[in-house]
Image 1: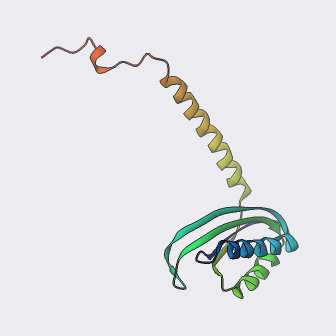
Image 2: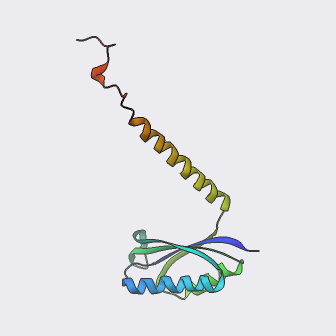
Image 3: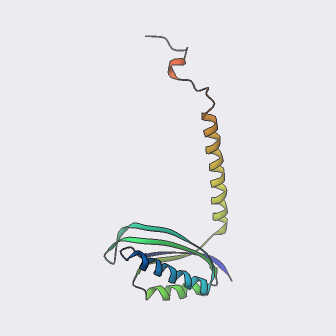
Length: 136
C-alpha cells in the first residue's frame, strides 16, 4: 500500500556548504530512485537543542514522498552508514491535517486582511475626542 511519508534529516552543519549540498543530493537521489518523490523542504543551518556527536549546528532538510512501507526501512539502513547524518525521523503524513492547515492559513489571511481594512476607516476615536469624561 502506497502511503505519504515525511522524513526529517539533520546533516552535520559543520561541513562545508558544497559537502552539505552533496549529502542532501545523495539523500534526494535515494528517494527519487526508490519512491515517488514530491519535494525537499530545506530549513538550512540551525543550532541544535543539544549536542549530537559533539556538534552544535545542524542542517535540516525535510523530504516528502509516497512509497511502499519498505522504503523508510531501507532509508534507515542507508542513513545508518552515513556519519554526516546526525539524526533522522520518518513519519506517515496525514493528508487531512495538511488540508486543514491550508484551509486555516487561508482563513487567517482573510481575517488579517479584514482587520487591516477595518483599521483604515478613519473613524478611530482618540481619548481626547471623548465627551463623556469630566475634566478634573
